[in-house]
Length: 471
Image (cartoon, rainbow, N blue to C red; front, side, top):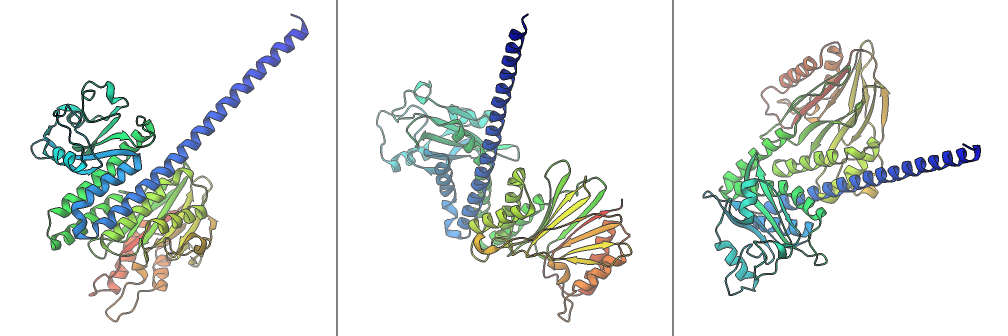
């Protein structure tokens, strides 16, 4: 082969190789961008829904309209002309519980056509849709979603006297049991069929609709006094389900946590969120208020943290984003104090930031207790432009070192003289128990606090997280 021809072939091969690599790189970047936008969109959807629904439940006279409000919210979110939330009754029939728009019967209609919305709704409420029969009954029995892009070609919908162009339906599943079906009819955007993105959004929102239905069902069956009791029980169960069952094993670090509510429900919470194979985010927070408002605020904070963890950059940026989200989606005078530790088991380092929360205590054998309290305002209290920055402190974890995160229910515990337990006694306990395991340190802190406050009812929630490294 001539030398010139050889170099021409080699150059062509290298050009094809580089072109293929550039094409694959562009595809990967596009995929990552799409994933990020989807995560941000879903986070906003959940936050907005929780905020709107919790506000709606605050007034007893609005409870019967809550599912109607939910249907309107979901329809607006996915861009449907009409939507109905069907619930399975005790006789295995699907009954409409929340309707938005002129939702048509999904079967052959009588010769006369009911054109006014109120007549369509009356006819819909009188229908008996048996589980296993028809399109909606099949969704309920099979537990499978349906997406009919061209309803005019569908054998069960083609002869309908009401114009049905496109249909989506998803089952509502609560603790493994189908409790109903959500169905959307006709795309309000452009008049064409629903898109795969709209179908995905409807499936994503089904869990939020199940939550809304459960809350409405509980509230509607109880008297006002019973509702208060049920509210506290629900909040307690919700909070309990959000606390980690156990602390994670993270390299040579040992982590222990404890939380005790003052009443039936707590505004405190802690969480452990794995960022990657080396970094763990440890969070201790205190949501203001009591009952359902505090519980929902806690749930929103936890959801925002976990929803944004895939795009985590720094603790400072995370705190800024949290403050922006909470200020936008919470009411006046609602805020959360937070302490965050970013634990790196490879580098044996820790970064610490706080937002209006208590100090971080550091203990090491043969060294005095160190107290760290970087600047940072409580989250959700101030708009982003006034909240200021969140200081970061980073340090290496050394042999026989422990750190203590806690809520103010520990240091502000009161005795029968109205005196607070205080920070100095807590430091003394930490120093005295610096060589003991984290669970024993927590046990001794609680023992001394309980003795100090003996005979006085616990006034505030108490939360402790200990992280130690023995080398």
